[in-house]
Amino acid sequence: MVVSHSIRANAEHDKPPMLLVLRGQLDELFILIRLAKEVQAFKSFAACRVG
Image (tube, rainbow, N blue to C red; front, side, top):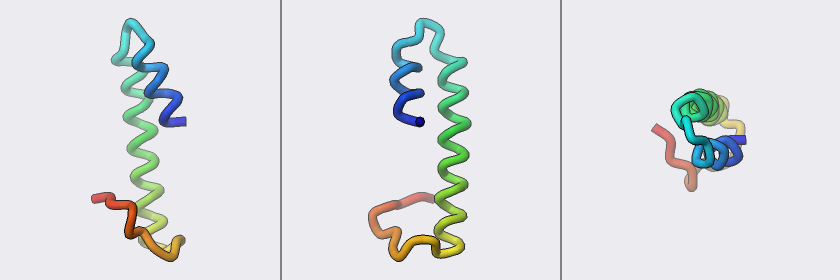
């Protein structure tokens, strides 16, 4: 989803509205990653450096 929105934003003539959508999705993704780290949903996050 994030990749498709970034491709779409690059193709748009008026980029800011699509970039705002992309920014919101990235914020949601970062929150989900932090929650997953907190509840230890995965064995290791060694390859994933967030905050």
